[in-house]
Length: 104
Image (cartoon, rainbow, N blue to C red; front, side, top):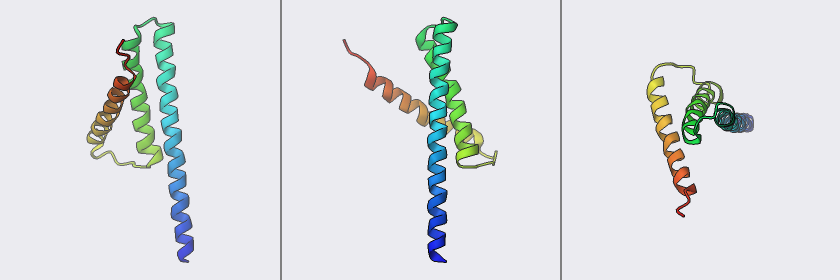
């Protein structure tokens, strides 16, 4: 019986990890797609387009992670969760942007 529990927990973690990767990949595709749409089709400045694309992808990522990956259906505290998630995402975006910045 004990082994069965270990395999069930491992399977659950593997499924959650796969969902996490799919959610993140989906958000990345959404980000790049909207960036291309805003820049190439609507001819919006690439920096402004990047901000809009990030905000849309953030929303997709948060919703997929909360409701699909982690199956957290509760709405209590969702604003706080979204705020914390946004701060982490925006910090990562800032760090990535600084690391990619060309000082020439």
